[in-house]
Image (tube, rainbow, N blue to C red; front, top):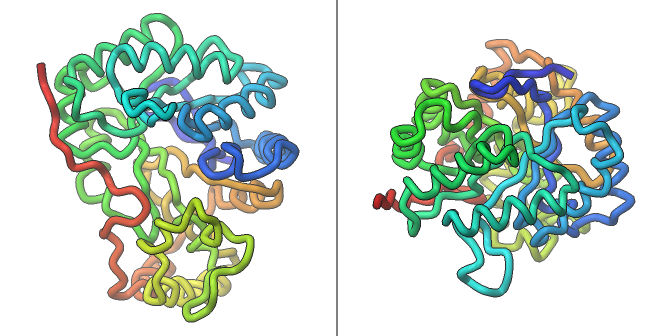
Length: 332
């Protein structure tokens, strides 16, 4: 496993990290969650990413039990805040009150005194950006988080926060980024790089589509992620014969290079120096080790050209699973 510096922080994160969105929030059994987490440690993964809203605390609770058995300095822990935490529609967002409440709740569930990275899960246009920035800074001042980040913010939103808090405010950006969703390259990567902010990308395998297991013209495999009710809406956005056919054109390219499709897809996102880590999910330990094998894999210029040719005219900059919110920025 190789490691990369996370923005302007002193954190060295594994190129492959473990996430807990659709898995440890209730998608897999407790024993599988533990097995996958231990497999991550075995593979050299030191970066674990979760959120308060995953299972409304279930994912944090699961990792709180498992990770507490490991020395706190042996892993880097990230969580997020913004999503709705109860049936009350007001129980969400990035207000100072909600951030203050949720950081304490997250720390309790995670069984730790601090998180290494605290992230705004999405942008909250209903709260003045000054209030949000000050609330996050207070979390750091109190020692409850070492560093701050954000997920799926627009360039306008990023710049507004940096203008208030300075270039050292954030150390990470968490966008969706993959062979099938390349939009962050256009503006977000450059803006962040200029402010010492690294990318930790989610859905680098496009929720499993880039594994190649889904075939055009064939039913969704039983037991697969896109067969679940949770992913029904997302399936309508990204699961098309055009996309699946393009992915199948990538399969022989990976085989000829002596690598699996997941390795090709993960190495592709890691080819960019702006990317510090690729967040992967896993329901079995062997998936963790398979994903970890992509660390350090270099893709030649010829292979990258072949990948571009195989994708052809397939849209790679249209919204897929969760495009950035386009709402503007509210000021005091």
